[in-house]
Image (cartoon, rainbow over all chains, first blue to last red; front, side):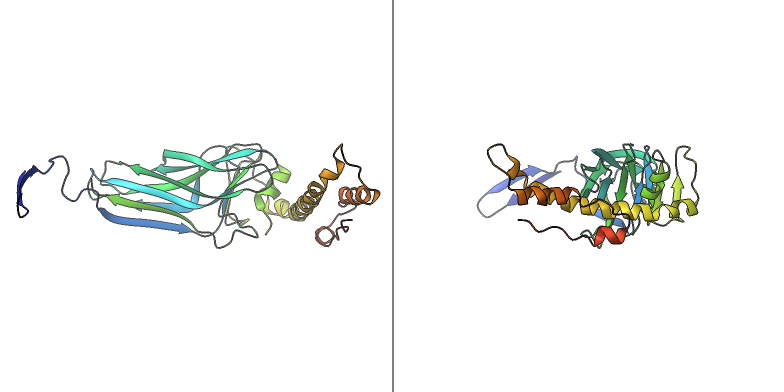
Length: 163
Length: 111
């Protein structure tokens, strides 16, 4: 679309890019779930964290969903072992990260992970946090309480972004 | 709060299991792990609690040893008092069999 503008002394002409839809990038809805109790696992396969899932229904299949997890995670063992976390869309892993590592008996960190997802659907879509242990008796946790870490709040939030 | 997973791992170190809310009634067993009864898990609680108390004690003891490690360097002669102090630190876990004992340990005074 051609544009003309007079700004006093100059006559400016330009073109609105046709590839950018009006309203693109706007946040259309926000869905969030917060978990305050702990969840721990020794499972060596991706394991759904109860209470850290949400459902969002995109209003258009061209819209994107920005999903973000934040919260305290920990990996406990007497050796140096890893814990993994991931976000799944409808039980399919879409992004993974490290949930903690320890060289002692306890290693709590404040973790974060995010992804700009393109589900290409207008159906209800579920996002959930998963945890996985490396094995070797490693315990991977969300919201593990300690004498120092209190008032834990692990949160998963989804923003629908206009496409 | 006793860590239920640590109690389970005392019985089966290869157990693959999840616990929600550290609630013994919210346990999910994974990948063919044979479930363990709540009574057997609870029987491990005193052992886990003693482990936790002993770990806390050892961490504090180890730091005190680290703080005086430099006395043992080759260009230094360690005093008899320091030698005794460090040996008392090393022996501080001897004979402890209960959480109460672990939590009431009195550390020796640093010379």
